Image 1: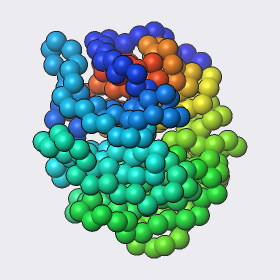
Image 2 (image 1 turned 180 degrees about the vertical axis):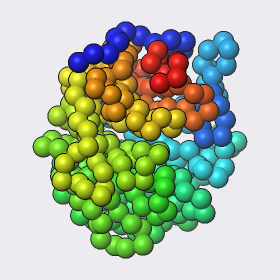
Image 3 (image 1 turned 90 degrees about the horizontal axis):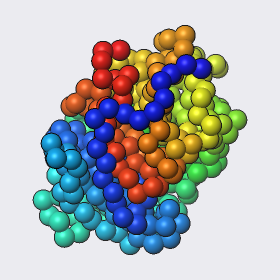
Length: 325
């Protein structure tokens, strides 16, 4: 399979000493502001840190840092307040933080009975809802202004690794699980809408296409990414292979309908265009440990952030995104 290999253009790095990165997300409001959820001791024991970083001409600097008494595994920015973030942790809790109030969490929501690996703030207008996914095999719906969950979604038969809102359909989210399925849910109805047996392996991540409300991607322990059209889920619409270990996170581009990125336990980040005969565009190799967090900037075209268990957060523009695709 073709595709350029190596580092990345205009790369900046920030080290979180003693912290292993699990998730990164660019602010939807402020260009150059980035949140990273991290854990001590690879998330097996110890505490967690939410690092809010600022990018400037000199590099990346720490804007705010918040500690929690368990590992932090995911982070999502509020869609209606530029200062507010939500994290999820190993003790079954969600934390709501305000960068303007750097003392501690505004609120802690603890209902899950095991690790919470995923948290996502809704992106459709008129809704301010958060969805979480846990090792307890449930997803929960939260109103951030209320200290308890609004609804619990049951049906998965394994750990839920990823819960992602549709950017198109209000009240609709997807979940990916160790039970090898991708599921689609509607908050207005209690049962699952669609069950897709996506891989013959644990599915660690999913994402929605920003340009097609029926298209999702999954990434799994079988090292592959697969695309799914909700109008016909019997066969994937694409199958991208190249990673040599589990695919930890997948992200569709905010700017290109057919472009996506993935990071993996093989230490690499890969960029793909599933419309091309040779879909692998580039492989970025700049980490020395499991690469777990990945995001693409909404503000700066082509800019990518990632984080890994090597204590590094990186912001860069891969060569394949530096010029129009």
